[in-house]
Amino acid sequence: MLATRLSEDAHRSVLLVEAGPDHPDVRTLPRDVTDASEPTVDHDWGYFADADLDRGIPVPRARIMGGCSSTNACFALRGAPQDYDAWVALGNAGWGFADVVDDFRRLEADQDFADEWHGLGGPIPIRRHPPEEMNRIQSAFLDGAVASGHRYVEDHNRPGAVGAGPTPRNVRDGMRMSTAITYLAQARSRPNLTIRPDTVAGHVVCSRTRASGVRLLDGSLVDADRVVLAAGTYASPMILARSGIGPAAELLALGIVPVVDLPGVGSNLADHPLVAIDLPTRPSPGPSRFQAHVTFHGSATDLAGPADLLLFTAGPFEVGPEQCASGAVFGIVAGLMAPTSRGWVRLASSKPDDPPRIHLAHLANPDDLERMLDAVTEARRLASCEAMAAVIDGDELSPGPTCPSDDRAALAAWVRSAVSTYHHPVGTCAMGPDPDRGAVTDASGSVHGIDGLTVADASIMPSIPTATTNLPTIMVAEHIARGLRRS
Image 1: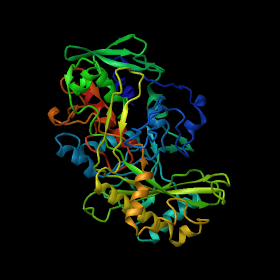
Image 2: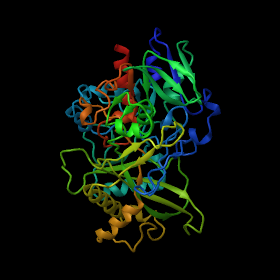
Image 3: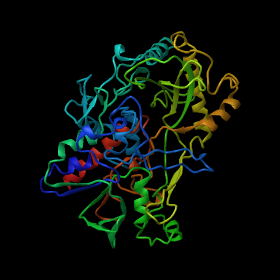
Image 4: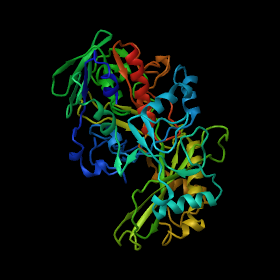
């Protein structure tokens, strides 16, 4: 996306370096990359969270042109206006919702709504499944949620929307519309854009306190007037750290000479934790397994603020009889969208091919655990409603009837053992005005203390939006690119 926007200026020469493969011809894309019915993890870096602190759960990150937009579930949600106004309150002028709504509009081609909140001419097509397209699981979930008291929401991207409704997704005719298929396709023929796939960046080369290029893993050097990192929340801070930009004591311990002491590099990791209530059902066809969701507030959450809990149904998925006698399962998935727990990502060594150490810290704050229990309890309440009973074929599979919702201690123990990632890590190169308080970049994405170096991905988000981060990450890149083009 950044390469597309920056190369719109014919006087600017842009080199796009991608660690994974590129498929300029959409017809050569692997089937699982084009199929938007479910995510894929077959094009991945193979990262895992800390074995002792996080049970060693996998944390997939895409290694393919388009990044995670090429492999994710295609949820196209923005979050609440308060999410972005909070960034301004943290010292990041120009990032309030009123400032970024045009960036959202610029990326969108919304096929359902044409008003001041939605874009029509952007590269990313967005639509919501109408009732006649929903499979029976998704339809029952949506009908049951509304019948159980959740307000029907026709547009989850309208400011103030809280309730149950169809999920906006960046899908066209069943195809995942990634940034590679949409943005980059517009720019491939430009003479001022060079694309180098299957090329890994080792570290940024600095001349004193100015970035002057990138050393690639093969040892070659790319000279640059400006370096823009968009390697993601796990990899961007690791590239900075290998470049001598990060916590000086940690760098010295790994034999890396510090260039700038930025203690916030790799800290402030936020991710939406997730657990799923698994239920038996019968196999049934359907165009997608992610079509509707519900947002709501936890029992102790301020109703004037954004909804902090989200439920969606995943499935049905066909399984063997040894796993489920009915032949298929689905999940009511519960996500905590405003976590206060924070983790970190750190170098394991100075070698660029070594994976990072990742601590997700899911539910480390007791308040996060309590709100997740609220979400699980509500998921079970919806599972017992009349509409859902018609599609459930047997007893709950997980956590199961031996873990009743009124036993909060037992439910908490299960949640701790089952919690996983919603795949929305942010914050490890957080923007802010004060490096001594953990800021890594300023509000323009420029790294504190280093000229000519910008970060433009989800790692600069100082707090996590109350939405899936697919669209907010593209918005961040749009916003940063707009500033770079003016500079």
